[in-house]
Amino acid sequence: MTLAVPDFPTLEREGLVYLDTSATAQTVRPAIEAMDLYYETYRATIHRSVYSIANEATEAYEDARAKVAAFAGADVGETVFTRNATEAINLVAYAWGRANVGPRDLVLTTQMEHHSNIVPWQLLGGRLEYVPVGDDGLLDLDALDALLAQGPKLVAVAHVSNVLGTINPVAEIARRAHAAGAVVLVDGAQAVPSLPVNFAELGVDFYAWTGHKAYGPTGIGVLHGRRELLEEMPPFLGGGHMIARVGDTESTWAEPPAKFEAGTMPVAEAIGLGAAIDWLSGIGMDEVRAHGRDVTEYAVERLSEIPGLTLYGPADLEHRGSLTSFALDGIHPHDVAEILGRSGVCVRAGHHCAQPLHRRLGSPASTRASYAIHNTHEDVDRLIDGLATVQEVFA
Picture 1 (cartoon, helix red, strand yellow):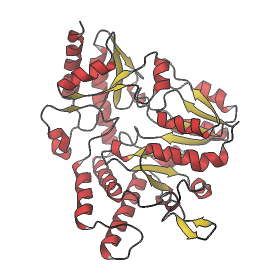
Picture 2: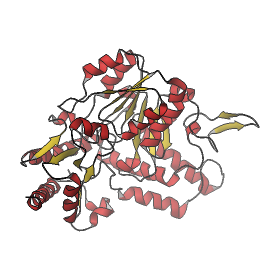
Picture 3: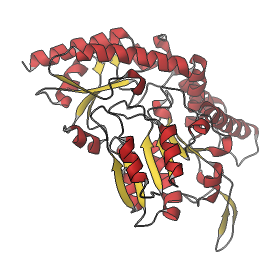
Picture 4: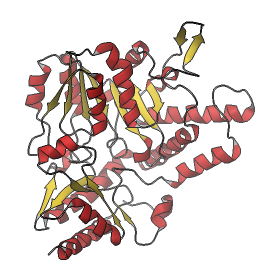
């Protein structure tokens, strides 16, 4: 299944093959139009004013929250808007972590995490341990059990690895972690745009994701958190809207999610994300997953035929999301990406904000091609042809 290119204005450029959705997805046209409509016809601040266009803006913002919550299987009161997934994780690290994690307490994360799910826990100051990644690209769940026996306060894990493409069994990880008394945070930035996600059914405590990978705009992210935890947590930022009452020496807080949305929020971006969610819902996430798997399977087959290419991640497509990372013998990934870019093939090169994982892989960097609903087998063929050119240049 593919969609008409007009849904993605940037892809109207001739000869462009965009294979970098894991970094940022193309913004779908309905999201752009929804934001334009806000700016052009009812531009106003939200929650504070009582005139008509302000009421329209407030309604559109909260309607977007309701769409986002329903899309991810969460309640509205469990759905906080942030700037991005990184801020969502930092919100938990500061607001929950500082109240619950001491210098001697253990926090578990994994070797396959994005830096955004490592650095906040380093800054928190607890004791950090990593669940190892096996040669098959999967987490070592026996090692997880051994670490859980040490009584961690938190387990922080990616739903889908942004390098390996590994789809982690987060519901099972959450079950084991809760049995050990740990709270579970999931980085869902790569998962929500590409496969069905239901916060309630996963049974995790916090789930973070971002709009710009879900065919929406930049500047808007989401944190879903269990209501009882959000109610217990102190605010992350202080200012307008997140208060119930401000006294001379102390203040009281609004109920979640308002407690965590200080100041003027990204109104247009939330509206744009709501429109992108409508668009994804219209396709159906089962269809999105099926299409991504089809294109990824074809890519794995074609890439595996290239001599001198090392493909990272699970061989079983059941455990792989819509991306492939690889290395070509003797050729730096930046050179690969630069030469591919000359022919309009857009891929990512570098450590992908996952340096611990690349140390585990024994390589400082890799080239990543990631696949979206608009990609086709023909796009993969363009990638393969481009890699042949790369190898010719360095022959």
